[in-house]
Length: 144
Image (cartoon, rainbow, N blue to C red; front, top):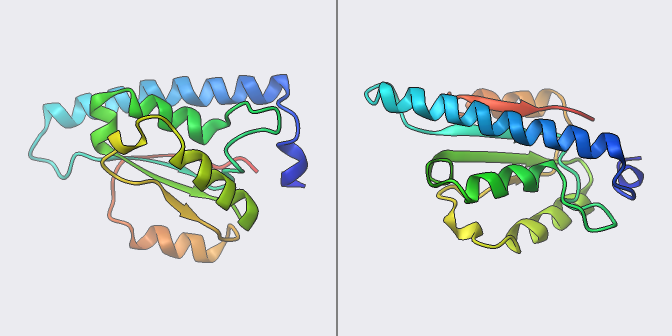
């Protein structure tokens, strides 16, 4: 089912991706500015999580939401130093494709924290993984 979703980049997919990209940019700007105002309060990191990340590109070559967020971070000096990302997909082929697509992004090395790729079914095990992660502000995109 997931594979068919990424066959065609439909208008609603474009609109959704644009909304998430703009929201991430605004959210990350607010969080990092707040972190700068209170430098003694924890580590300066922000997080972005996508639990149904997909292969990174649609069959027509259009990039999906995870790559839009990464490109936004790569091109922002503050975001690139602070962003921690987790991209998950239960389909192993999607994860391999996403990893390849991420590795081919121009200037991906600008990110201080390499994107984490998970291949897990969303459920209790993912919840346990998040319980182990140190708390940082996270924007989570959970849209199957």
